[in-house]
Image (cartoon, rainbow, N blue to C red):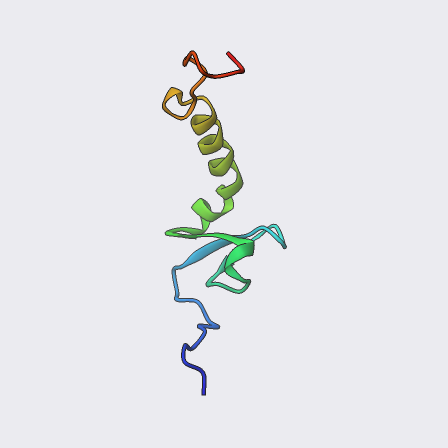
Amino acid sequence: MALFKRRTEGRPGEWFYCLRHQKVEEGPECRAADRFGPYATREEAAHAMETARERNLEWETDPRWHDSGKKDDPES
């Protein structure tokens, strides 16, 4: 008997974007490592890659995450 039961079906209204299949899915059809979500709407899940790109750009340009202004930084 398994200690933890894996949920094979999603809940209605839970939307995911599958990175492996590059499609929107209702409920977790694919493994967690291959998907973004959950999202509240199908539309939000459809824009998951765009949202990820925007967030990555924000993080890459956020001065709080870069030490380039310090004297001991060999790249400055």
